[in-house]
Image (cartoon, rainbow, N blue to C red):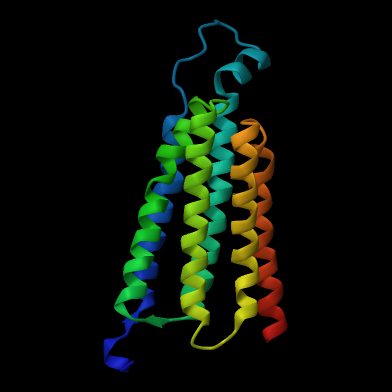
Length: 193
């Protein structure tokens, strides 16, 4: 591929930083307002009104952080790409934009099986697309070890989706383990240098 046909990924990095920043901020948008009617609420009342929403916010922030970190590493790893890779990156960023919507649904209806499956499928699809982008980045170099972290995260999201189809309260304990994929990628990077 001619160098003239390549896109500088630093431009995409600027766009993606904005998208991730807005999406991560919008995770707090669905926090309930004015749900506590007691004049002097205790911790139980506060937790009852905000608990599931705060868990969803924390989970969504962790997940967005996983994808942001992986995305930044990938853009640094492959600083130039062709138009098809840029287009796939834009679809990936679209899934990030949708994260506050599905996280909000999960915060409102966390134990409803269809919502858990929708949220889990969204996380898994985002992770699969992230992994596909990593494959496109490492293929020219043949540095397949770099896929270990994204593959692990995708595996976690697949397992969580399977668990969610059986026990809707289970995935919230599995999803945070996807963060280990970031440490795996860091380890692989340190071994390369």
